[in-house]
Image 1 (cartoon, rainbow, N blue to C red):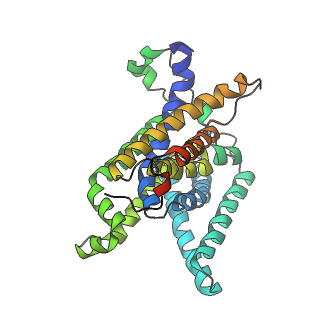
Image 2: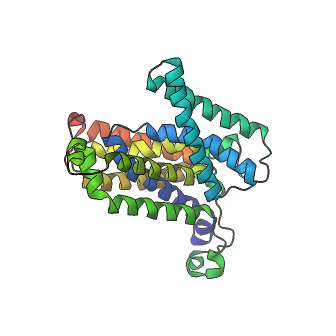
Image 3: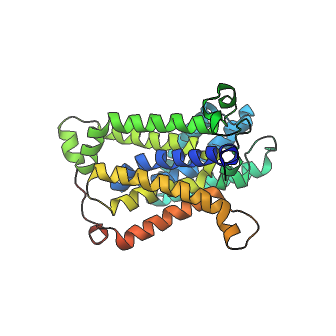
Length: 309
C-alpha cells in the first residue's frame, strides 16, 4: 500500500489505536500493581449508560457531554452500590457486580431504543467501536501531514485521543514519585503526609478519562484489554517500575499496529472475503502478547513477587 492509499485509509485509525492503547496502559500499570485492574472493567460498564444519556440530551457525540455523562453515571453507580450493600446486607464485591452489570445492560437497552442513525452510536459501536471508519477523506498522501487545509479535515477522534494521551502522560509524570511510593508502600506514604485516597481517586479519574475518550473508537468492552494486558505482560518482563512502564507502552503500541494490520488483511491472507473488527483484533493481540510473556518472560516464575521501585 503506497502513501496515497495508506495515509487516507489507515494512518488515522492506526494512530488512534496506538494512542488509545498507550493512554490506557499508562494508568493500567498502577492499577495492576495496586491489584485494582478490574477498575477498568468497572469503568467500561458504568460509562456506557452515562454516554448514551448524554447523547440523548444533547444530540451529539462530543467529549465534554460524554465526560459529564460518564461522571454522572459513576456517581449513580456509587450511590446504588452503597444502597444495595446496606439494604441487602451483601458483600461489596457482589453489590458492584450487580450494579455494573445492570447499568451496562441498561445502556445497551437505551441504545437499542434510541434513534442513533445520524451518528456512530449503536450497540455494535458501543461494544466494538468504529476504528475502521476513521478515514481521512481530505488526505492525498504523505504531503497532507503538513497541509493545513487537509489537517483541518482530520477525524476528531485522533486529536481527541492525542490530547487525552498527553493529559494522562503528564499526570503520570507529575505525580510519578507519589504514585510510586503509595503503590509500593501505602502505609509509609501516609506517614509522610501523602493523601493516598485522593491520589488513588485521581488515578481512577485518569483511567476514566482515557476510557471515555476511547469509547467511540474502540468501544466500552475492548478498552478493558488495553488497561490490563500490556501492563500485565510488562510485569512479567521486569521488576523495575520504570522498565515496566516502558515495556507496557511498547506492548500497547505493538498490539495496536499488529492488531490493525491483521484485522484488515489477516482474513484475506487465509482466504476469507471480509475483514474483522480492528478493536477486537487489537485486544486479541494484546492477549496473545500476555500469553507469550507468561511463557517466556524472565519473571514469569516470580510473577507473584513484589516489584521494586
